[in-house]
Length: 152
Image (tube, rainbow, N blue to C red; front, side, top):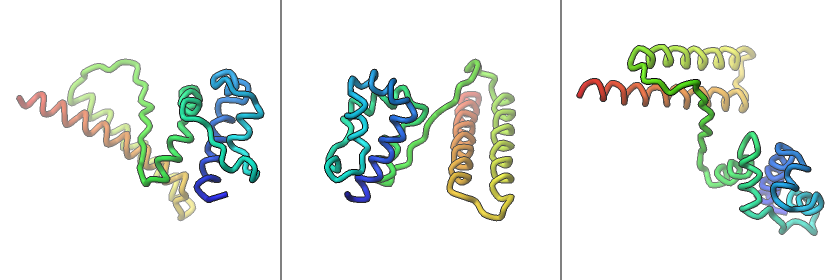
């Protein structure tokens, strides 16, 4: 089995386990055995992969788009998962933006402080810092839009 096939099968397994095998069966209409074949590393199942519609159904229910993320990584594409769930959108303007910017920057610095504590930034720590950096970038973009709106 190729490295790519193994990589996709591992992420397929992570997706099924994230959703739960019983729920995955219901969402896809596939049996446990069929789902198992999609991520099996046995030679007789090397050419079996989960259909795209099944992946989409499972990723809708999953906490993370495991297979989509794996496919993107194989092509050198970076995905950004937007998990922002604010109580209200509000248009507090620049003052709210500055406060939110400060909070996001503090969260990034907290991640950095925790990550560098042992002198080495691991891959998972780098990913957490990247997520905070992307959130900070989104705040800056919103702030820029508010400033442009007020300068007209």
